[in-house]
Image 1 (cartoon, rainbow, N blue to C red):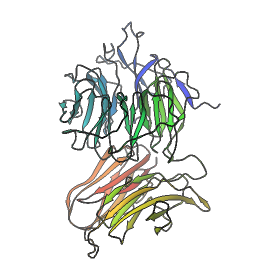
Image 2 (image 1 turned 180 degrees about the vertical axis):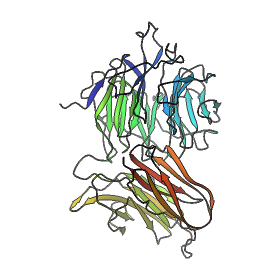
Image 3 (image 1 turned 45 degrees about the vertical axis):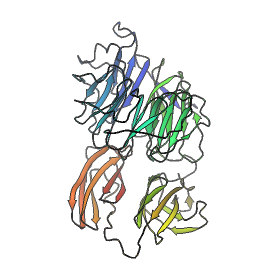
Image 4 (image 1 turned 120 degrees about the vertical axis):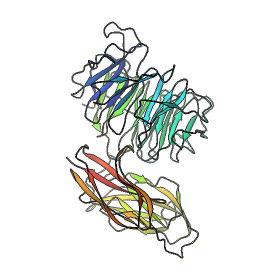
Length: 506
């Protein structure tokens, strides 16, 4: 009764990749020597339409005979919900949730495709074991090799930040591209000398980059890859096969010694999370939109977590708010800065504290009780470092403080009031089931983008784009085709970015 995992039978036992499609289909990619007499190292696609109770191999000529020497290790779902999967050095693609597949006419690499990921603007990236990085701008049909700045083309993992930056893991090093893959820089990763392959990477909802590295475990960056800190306490495995982050930012690591769990609260240690599992070598991980985890193992199929992991902190009546933006140590030359956090289940209000000291002994601003999950802070200081955290409240029940983040404001002239103040007003209605109206104001003529995205940074709609004059506007958003859950609307102007939370209920 204390189990945290339940087994899902899969006809083939060695599950090298797994994904939960937004339409509910569960896809498991396996290697085995027991399907139609195929030899080991053939890759197979298994599809379940009923949460893993029944499985079938799609009756599609492109895949129903297996892929010789083409085990599937990498998989991605783009913003249109198309599925892309690697088959050795090639790509297969499904536009209907895994029921039918087409194979690319050209092969990307003579090695293996080790990672696939999609930017929220649609570009698809593939990392390969011998030939570096490839990019597609036409939904995976054609690919360009982009290795400018990459010294070691043995790439083993790939991750894309919500801001669009691309990260590629090689041997004891991580590369980063800020220009959609055109050029790459080597990060100062300060990994130990004996560190091996960067075998897995993930970016959580807070924008933290987590990297699994052979021989040394997990390293963590909170500043877009500039500095890295080892997250080792409690992690007794050093071979990280897979990483996944939940909507609330928690991290699960699939290792050769089972699954480990790391909460995002400051100072948290890794906890072993194997209760109910009958296999310890975890090859692949994924999660669904509710935050339920699926784990593919080498000898015993798939396991599903019994619980979901959507809220920030499960202790106490109310959870502490989970901060979204700005990221820690953010700097700006603007007088105004918008603080944003996730809503907390059952919370009625929130309160923000902003201080000029990390121990909050010198409080600058204590907000009123807020019903929304944003707060715009207005400073009267020209150059100051600030610290902020948030509490959730419901009547007499008050949560613990969230994590503390720091931001710095550097303004050379506060005499003139800014003339380009822009913002998003509260969408109405919110929550909503089918449509909502999003008002926004521009203080000056600006080139803007008003975009809808989810907690993983995947873009679902662009509501406004182009040059707009100063004034008040409204945008309509139709969510009839989207699943229930938490989404965000972001207004980007020439110099500013503002975000509001949207909740879709069905």
